[in-house]
Image (tube, rainbow, N blue to C red; front, side, top):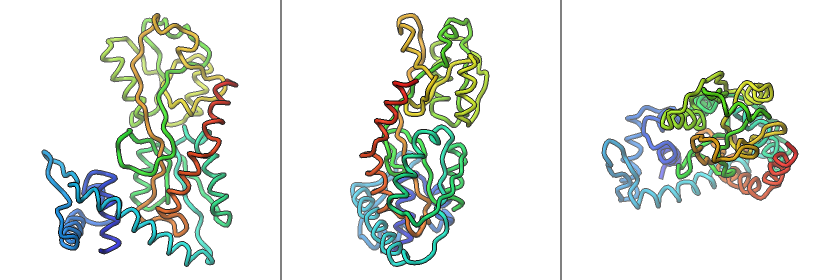
Length: 299
């Protein structure tokens, strides 16, 4: 089986779309379709089935997806090992601002243990822009948020949303709840706004930004309340229900999310799928949870 066809196949599995897979692999949609037909011919199996307007994997397709990831991991690992004695360009990491203080530092520590010879460049932006940069090959990997159950990326940790304020619980008693949220592409933004509408609770969106630093600064000045991932809380940021009885207020439920590491379809020579899996396993076994718990205790 062709390695590049397997890359396209995995890109489809992760995105659920031939269109998105084409963008990730820098091919046309027709080229992706031809690659998939060739894979079906090579395997002698039907890999896709129609479900409404969408395509879904058959049982054989899901089986191939497991093998494809392993084949690509071994392929990328072999190239990385063979080229490990050569000079390599820096590893370009994309990170949303909200994970720059919590997830990124621990990830960098582990990367330095695995690849001490490799220098790093970090680009901070919103998840939507980071996905575009991955598709365009402008970064090698990115820390992203996905909804549980999706296939995107390699799991770093599970997390959950929490309503927070900066020491001003009286804001919850205002007739129109003042909100300071991440940009509209953030899952907590959409959950907060949609939830307010369903509860028919008046609100005022004071500010929307991709900057976690801005949000936390505004909260500490009493400008509003916010919704964020529990792991991104820091000193001075207080969960709403820590000081106010849930019976006295009504706020929308916030979703659970997965924080994942997503690679470019043309990964860095030293950090392919095999190394990404190892890195994520190290992260899950690291002191990340302990560090987050300490932040919450010290807030």
